[in-house]
Image 1 (cartoon, rainbow, N blue to C red):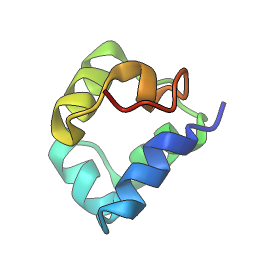
Image 2: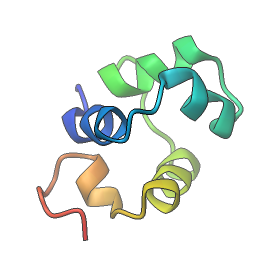
Image 3: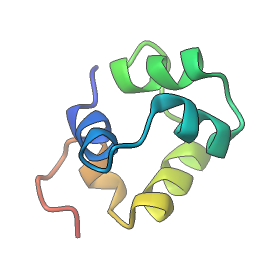
Image 4: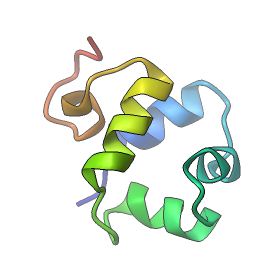
Length: 68
């Protein structure tokens, strides 16, 4: 499953995959695979990303279009 909101929020803020990968302590390739759904997002990664972007986990998982 591809996570459109996860990619969109990163691109809207002009953040490179490499920057987020460094924040998460993973490779850029691993982060890319998170966005495309090749690798499932863990609870730990979701929490870190939600806190980083200031949005809900449901938003990151495309369960809602409301980031709050």
